[in-house]
Length: 599
Image (cartoon, rainbow, N blue to C red):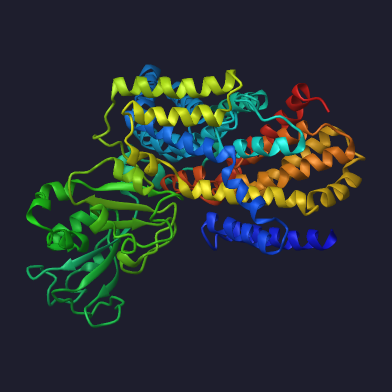
């Protein structure tokens, strides 16, 4: 037994390192751990692979499809915009309504999907009140996390925990099991975000803009521009051309065919065909190219396209889109050249912003990370769905988004019926949601191809693989072994202290690695410890469940990563705002859990 415990502990330690450092994509790391468990005989192949046939996989996949149906109809965005108009010109009322809407939608729709829709809306509202988005974006991210913890389907972590419980003789969660504790946290959390958070989020002078456009035009991008034959820069030194005197533009590097990259100096003579790597806000970059008759490198590539793919110069200059790279994006950890962004998806990468980092290489060879903000230019008429397909979040509302009323009603009825049937009958929620996903196609809300695009296969693979870790911690005896040591220590303390201990432990771990991986490790440990001490396990299960969703103190949570770049936050901002919210959640757990699940 001890040999298996040591072996599993080493594999678990390796997993924590892989998840924290993100050496490989999360799903690859999870698959690697699963294979190690099989190769070391901790799990049999059938035990390891059975996780992929788990109901949670079917449920989460079905939810992806139904959410895609809701998004396609424009229903969620329409409801948000309508209710925000009702809120009027009162800043705090509008802010409160926005947070409540996001929390409501996040309870039934994935946090990431809700936030992707809400970011452009929040930016637009901040503009109308003359405020920096920094005051709005972190609170809406936290609101989505608060809403998601209230239902079974609000977060995949709750679904995974629910699937683990029957292995210990406990019942699955129902749709609203977690809301007994989550609702008080949600109400208090929104009050905190509305009344207090704005004073904890520092805003520098550069953030104090009269409009969001001003704020976002101050964002610095790196771009490549080429010197053409008629440019006044040809055969002139950098000093003669006064390039060093350009207040809002920095020339970082000069690239000349056949030469290594050149650091610009005053006496360097510029020539036709040289490519300048420059930094500045997008408006100043556009003004700079016009002043010196330069061309963005990607624009020159576009002009080589066939005639039917060309558009007017005016259109090309106007149609710039700022988009945020999410963790699920196919661009994450890849270059624009590797994904054939221009040729396959008809988008030119014009510029890139990486918070706190200046890019010093050709844009096509820059490895793009989650949280980067890109300026892209469509080569053809923009298909709004292309951003969602690529895992990009536009930072401005797209005019092409349409509200399809009849389809929206059908999609809403299907979604509500699927959840209600699963909650109110004996039919498993996975079955009713799968039926809802099928109905989305039968009723022409989605086409079959959109189903495969809607499902985030990386997440399903990750969950299927990580569930094997939950089995292994039990079968290896590690959970019982650790619980034995913990029980010797915790048995001397009150149940409330034990509840707080597991909450704090889970919160600290989930700040560093994924919520799902944290839950898979902590749930078996909590249940075994409760049994060793002689307590009922459900109070500790609920403490771990709520804590796994309290990812407020670091930007590593995917939802927080969505706002980290656009908001211009620092790491310390999340600690400052998130710590108090986490402490409030801890108090709520200690006070409310025993009322619903006595020890």
